[in-house]
Length: 302
Image (cartoon, rainbow, N blue to C red; front, side, top):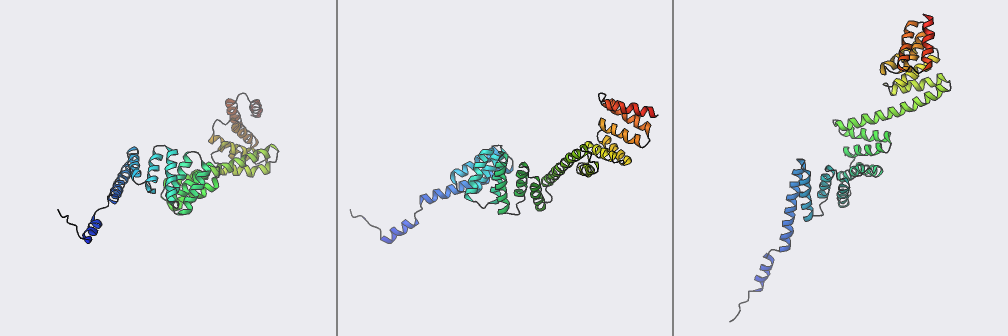
C-alpha cells in the first residue's frame, strides 16, 4: 500500500495553525489569577480579610510577579494584625516596583507597628519623596517622627498631610495632638525655670517664665499658683489674687493656692476673706503647720 504524503506547504500550515499548549496553559493561568485578584479586591472591600487573603494567595501561586498582589496580600495581613508577615509582603511588592509610593508607605506602616520607628520614618520619607502628594505618607512619617520624640518635625509632616487633604479628620487630630505636645513641653520647660528662679529669690526673672507656662498650659493650677507667688513677692497683690483665684477655680482642692490666696487678701486688707481662705487650706491639709499659723494671725486681725 502506497502511503500518501501531504504536500510540504500543508504540513507547514498545519504546524502554524496548531495551538501551542504551553501558551494556552499560561493564558488560562493568567485569566485565573486575574479572576482571583478581582475576587480578592471585592472581599477586601467588604472587610472579609481572611477570604481575600486566600484569593490573593491563589492568584500569587499563578502569577508571583504581580506587585499589586503582594501589596494587597500585605494589606490583608496588616488588617489581621499579622504585621511581620505584612512587612514581608510589602517588601516583595517594593522589590518588584521600587518607585511605588503607596507600597513603600505600606511598608513604613508595618515597620511602625513593629516598633521600628527609625526605619518607618526613613521608608515613609521615601514614599513622600516618590509622590509628594501622597498625604498618607506624610501623615505616617509624622507618626514615626512623633514616636522618635521629634515632635516639631512630626507637626510639619502632619500639616503637609492636612494641606493635601483638608477634610481628613484624622490628620486634623494629629496636628492638634502635636501642637499640644509642643505647648506642653514648652510649658514644662518654662515652669521648671520659673521654679528655679523663684527659689533663688529672683522673682522678677521668674515671673515671665511663669506667665509663659500659664499661656502654654492654661489649665494648669500649679502654673497659675506659681505666677501668683511671683506677683505676691513683687508686691502686686491684686494681680496675685487674680492668679490664685484662677488656680483654685482650676483645682478647688489645691491647699497651697488657698493659703496663698489668703496672703494676697490679707495684704489687700480683706482680712475676713483671708481667714476663709486659710480655713479652707487647713481643712484640705491639716498637717501643714504654716497654714494654721497664717489662720491664727489673720483671726487676731479681725
